[in-house]
Structures are given as structure tokens and as C-alpha cells.
Image (cartoon, rainbow, N blue to C red; front, side, top):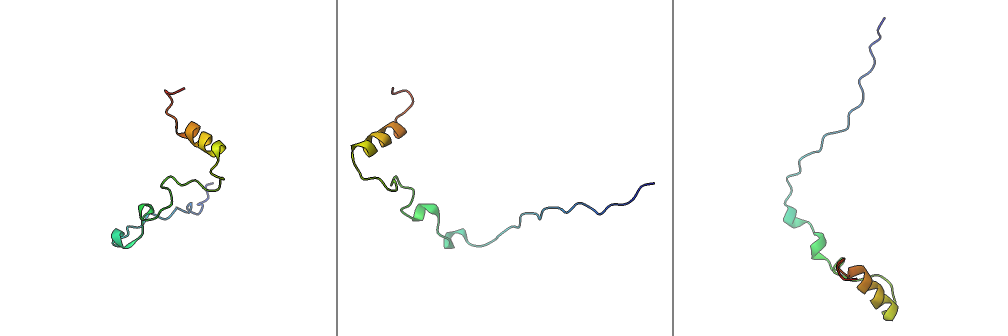
Amino acid sequence: MTTASAPEPREPKAALIFDDPLDQQSSDDTDRGWGERPGGTGGGADDLKRFLDEKPPHHL
């Protein structure tokens, strides 16, 4: 004997949005993310950390 089970709930489909994208602020419109590092005292240890973080892998 088979019983009919309720269908599985489906996730809603992504809706298309036809707003003007130029009306919204993008991440490039802000100063955030342009190389500023939060915190730090600006001392030599911070400079060394930044140098080591940004050093290309072929420079050892």
C-alpha cells in the first residue's frame, strides 16, 4: 500500500529585478577596500606585516 506524501517544499526562484543599477551605491563608490588597514599603530611591525602579506610568491 502506498501513501501519497506531501510534496517537498521548494526554494523560491530568484526574482529578476529591473531597477536601475546606477541608482545604487557600489563598493567602488566608497573609500573602504582601497588598501586601508584597520587598526595598527603605523610602526615598523605593521610595515613588515604589510610587506610580507603583499609580497609576490616568487620573492623569497
